[in-house]
Amino acid sequence: MPELPEVESVVRSLSSKIIGRRISNIYINNPNLRNFIDINIGNKLVGSYISEIYRRAKYIVFIMDDFVLIIHLGMTGILLFNGNLSLKHNHVNIFFDDGNYIVYNDCRRFGSFHIINKDEEEVFFSKIGMEPLIESFNYTYLKNLLKGNRCIKSFLMDNKYIAGIGNIYASEILYMCGISPLRQVKDINDVEINNLIYSIKNILTESIKNNGSSIRDYKNADGVFGVYQKFFKVYNRQGKECYNCQNKIEKILVNGRSTFLCNYCQS
Image 1 (cartoon, rainbow, N blue to C red):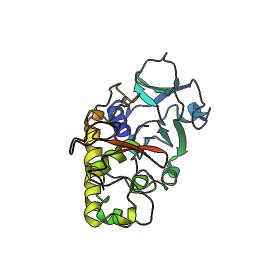
Image 2: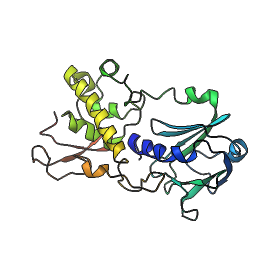
Image 3: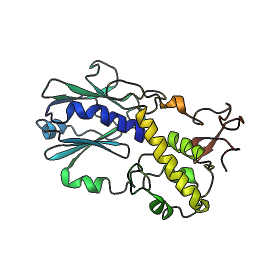
């Protein structure tokens, strides 16, 4: 599933192309995504001026005159600028007044489209936690949340607390700061909290610089694959040597999710 860096890369690759444009037409080839796409989407959005596009957690948010269009890419969703209109699994085509368009393609159909009024935007995102790349995501914020018996990896992936971190980056973050994914959050000490904050910001920022990670299908809106997977230290490297200690990277399940770690470097 595209995580924060991948979604941010899509937003950045779209912004200069569609901000200031008006929607001229919308075609829905298949409305059956994770949520059923409103068949009246065209009536609502055709003619709308796009004033802003940004990312919130793993959502892409289009701000328009009266409405907000929110897209989640699910597991395999791709938004392509001027993409091939005849590809299998193209579900939605959005055309603009300058003749350009974006195509939403999603072979597994776990993505979603939401149309809300502008005054509903805050409520829509009210249950999502803080963005990890802003200044106020700091020691004080994290310290107040690290309570209880749940494991640290599950905590990092819980979007109620931190927006946008998924399975890939949780493993990489915990390796970077030397914390076992099985550690209970109440046992994370102050030094480790600061290391966590540094690791979260560092890894997400570096991944964005590299257009995210392309494990399977992910591309940005220009059709460019991410390359951050070339810098993975543990994710998907089970059985290979740890770059730090040369012991083998292990793969375990944490709450049903594949998790990668070095048992010697992480405690």
